[in-house]
Image (cartoon, rainbow, N blue to C red; front, side, top):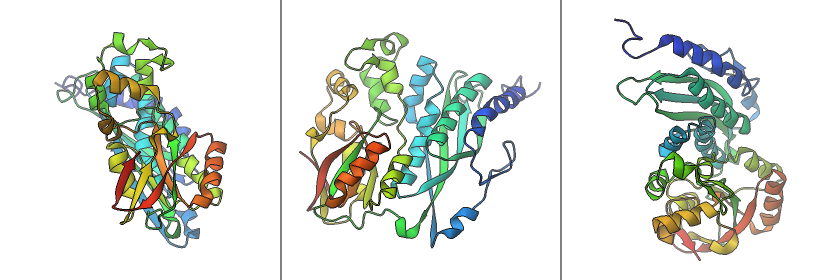
Length: 341
C-alpha cells in the first residue's frame, strides 16, 4: 500500500504546481519576496510606510454552488476570477488596495491540467485587481469528494490609510447613489438558480436571443472586479462616503450595511436596464420581485454613496475606467434601510 493507492497522487500535485507557475508569474508585484513553492508567502510592507496610519483589510470567500456549472460545462478557467472578485471587491468597498491573495482548492482527484486552468482564472482575477498571488493549497480529498468535483475559496489582504477608510458614517440626506453594472449573476444565488433551470449540458448549451449567448455562458460569466473602478473615482478627487458590494442578500441586505442610523437609501428600479438573465430567472422560477432584489444583484454589482455635487464626476470617472454606471437613487432621512420605488 502507498499514498497513491490510497487516492492521493503526489506526482500529480507536483505537476499541478509546475503548470500553474506561468499563471502565477503574471500577478507578481515588486513587494513579493521569494518564489512559489515555499511554506509561506512573503510580502514587503515597505511601501505602506508613507501612509499616516496604515490599516490592514482582509476578506475571504468562495464561489458557492456556482462551481457546479463549471463541472457541468467542463469549463474551469473563469471560476477562479470569481473567487478573487468576492474577496477583493469587499476590500475595495472599504477604500482599500488589495495587496496579495491566497487560494485553497479542494478536489476529489488532482487532475493537473484542470487545477492549472482553475489557477489561471485566479491569476486573471489578481491581474484585474493588481493583487499578487503569493501562495495557495491544492488538497486532494479521495473519499470525501467525488473525483470530478472541487471547491475553491480564497483569502485577500489589503491596506488603506485610515483617513481614507470608507465607513459610511459621512453619508447624509441629499447624497446620491451611483450603481456600477454587474456582469450578470456574479457568484450569489446559485442554489436558487439551480432550482429554476435544469442543470444539464443540453439546457445550459441552448442559445437564447435575449441573452445573446447560451444560458450556461450567461450564468458562468465571472464576477466583475471593481478595484480599479473605485480607484479611478478616488483619483478623480471624489470622496466615496459609502460603498456596498451587492452579493448574497441583494439590495435589501447589502445596501443598508453602508448606512449610518437615521437615513435610508431610495433606489429607483427604472434608473438602469436590468439584464435579461434576471428576467428569465423571475419568469421561469415564478420568483416574486421582492425576492429577486433580496437574492440577486439585479444588474448592479456595486453601489456608491457620494455628495450630489460629485455625481457627474463619479459617473465620468467610472466611464473612463471602462465601467457602465448609473445614477440609481438618493439618500433620504428615515429609518435605516433601503426602499425600492
